[in-house]
Length: 485
Image (cartoon, rainbow, N blue to C red):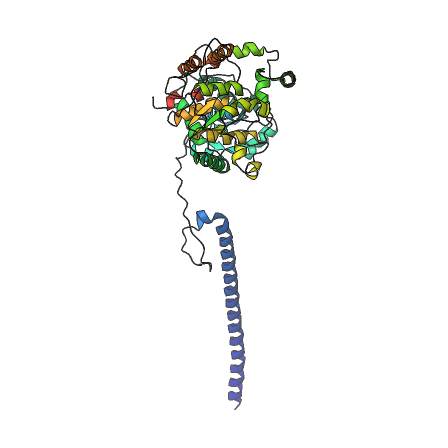
């Protein structure tokens, strides 16, 4: 019996130990399972979070494991964007540029600076736009142009960044960089011999004025073609500007063909040029005061009559009406006025409106809410006019400003679309003779048409004047190296 009792007692003690061990192992297994499950859930949550941000890149190819209950979801596949391969080159440094002037003056400068950056093998920082000019437009590059398209579409030519890397930004903050205005009308060797050594020394160079800093002529063909590529392909307006521009064009097209008149008869243009034809004494005084108010407008004392006879003044609305009529322009054609506020208002527009009753402006075609975003943003307004000007059946600028010239060149690139460039010096003489009675209407009209036979945007070589670059034909008005001549 004692042995049995001893045996039984020993068995009970062993059983309790085994149970405790089993319970411990089970508890540990449950703990491991619970922790594993928790970790898996954490991973799932993190992946879902990543999926929301990086879904198009990371999770797009995963098989669907969850189908939402909604049945009204329409899936659309965005077209693939085929990007050019990145250009590999040894980076010599970084180029910052600050453009000056109006939209199209800055547009040409941007194209020039991309070409310079490409030639010097440097990284270009997205250009800064002028905010201190007469127009005081606060728009940044990305407010007017599609900045991502600009960077991606040119990446096989030059590396473009939205901002400097942090370490170089700190150098700029400490003043460890060089800032200067390059010499006007320079050829590419100037940038290689004068600017590149500065970039290598300082790592960052800032060009603080970029208008007309690259020559029209005498440049390598690949530089000229790159300037065109930037202008006609790389600089794409934002979707908001393009959509509104298409809306204006569609409204006009419903009513037939239309002519865009770039009537450069705005207060700033008249004050700057000193042209006061048709203005009353109070207006002459106002324009003179404005000219003296801006110290960077160097010409102060101006003989308006002499300047007009030399063809250096924008055509007045009255003169423009006479010339369009002499060219046998259909009086019922829609004329879209691409300009700011005309100086003198309705009083000065009366002759043009009487001769061509279908005058329209963007403010007449669009809802005020649609244009509200563009108010006090002159460059964005100019971009809208630029878009409509490219699409017009006829483009007529009344002055050789930057918009007139760049639009003319762009229309040449699009297939030599009709652009009538006024020969103002000859026209002013003909107008004065007609008003004096020494020419009758038929003589006047025939002479006007003869003068403009070869001024309709047809193919031609650019006029070059080797020793007077400022008087040469502007590259962007006639980029013949990029055209099929």
